[in-house]
Image (cartoon, rainbow, N blue to C red; front, side, top):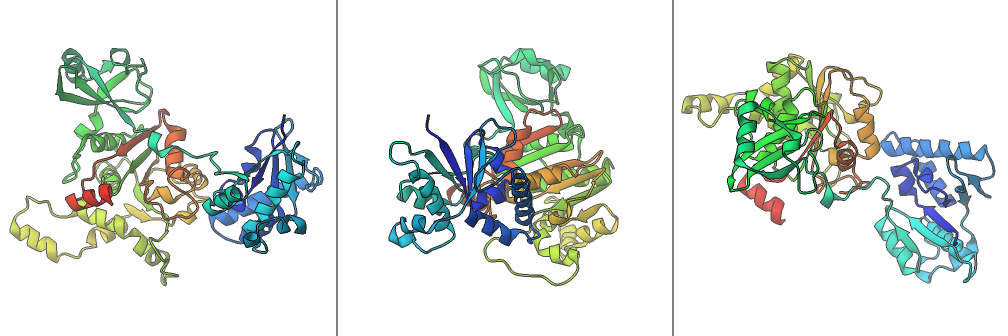
Length: 462
C-alpha cells in the first residue's frame, strides 16, 4: 500500500487550526514557509490572528513530544505523523523556470514535489497538496501534483437544507389539520417514508386540487404537525408574510421555543426585515426579550474606506445603515395612510425611531469582534450578513448565548465579501447543516425576492 502524504498550505491552518488532526492515519507535512507565514499573523487581533496563535501552540505541544523534523505521532491516531519540513535548494531548482525564486507559494509547492520524488518512481508516495488558494492548486496541477481544496467543513450549497417540504395528501387530512389544530406525523410522510425534521415546515397539497394547500410545521420533536400558530397570533403592523417561505420564517422567529434561527436567501427576500420586525415585536410589544441586539461583520463591498473617527457607535454607523433602513421601514407610514399623515411622515426626523429605541434601552448595536467573552441573556440577537463569518466565528457567537436569548443568523451565501470563505465553507451554511433536526433550531431558505421587481430581476439574472 502506498504511503499517503498531505501537505498543508497556510490558509488551511488559518481557516481551521485543528486541520492536522483531520486526516486520520496519514502523514501531515507542514512546510517551514507555512510556519513563517503563520508567524506574521500571530499579532493580528482578528480571527486569523487567533487561529495563528492556536496553531503555533499546537505545533509547540508536539515539539515537546519529539522532533518535528523527523515526525511526531499525531494524537488520537494509530499511524498519523506530523512533520515540519524545510524547502531545500535542489527542490526549488527542480521547479519550472517560471516558478523558481518566487518564494511563498512556490516554496510550499517545492516541498510537496520533493515528497513525491523522494521514493523514486516505483515507490513514490501519494502526495496531496491541500490549499484553499485556487491559484496554488492550479500551479500544483500544472507541475503534475495532486491538489485539493480543504473541505472538512464544506457544505454543498446546491444540497443545502431548505427548511420545508411539500407533501401530497387528501382533502380529508387537510381539513382535519385545519379543524383540529394538529395532525399525527404518521398521517403524512414523504415518498421514502420519512417524517419532517424538527421545526421543519410542511406544505400540505391536496392531491386532487393542487391549488388547495395548508402550511404547517413540526414544532420541535413533537409527534404532530400544527398550523402556523405563532404567525397567526402575532400583529406586526405593516410587515406581512408575502409568500410561504416568509410565513414559515416568521413562525420560527416568533416561536420562543426555537432558540436559534437561520435565514438564508438571495438579496431582497426579506431575511433581515423579518428578523428585525419579529425582534422588535417581541421586545417592545410582548416584552418576551429585554433588548434587540444587532451585529454584523464590518466587511466592505469593494475597497475598504479605512479607519473611521468617533466613538464605537459612530464607527459602526456606516455598517448599520441597512439595519437602520429596515427599522425606519418597519416604523414608517403605511401605504393606506392619508396624505396629511404621509406629509408629516416625510418631515419627521428619519432616524428618530432608531435613536428612540436606543434611548429606551430596547435596541443595542454591538461590534461583532467584541462578542467574545460576553454572556448575552434575555435578548433577541440578530447577526446580519453571517455568510461573511467563518465556522469558528459562528461557533463563538452561539456559545455566547445566555439563558432566554434567541439568536438569528441571516445571510446570502452568494454575496460573500470575506476573501477567506466561500459559498460552501462559510459559517452560515455550515451552521445550517450542523444543527438541522435539532429541537431548539429552525431554518428557512427564502427564494422569492419581495424588495422590488427590479431587485428580483437583478438577483435572478445578474
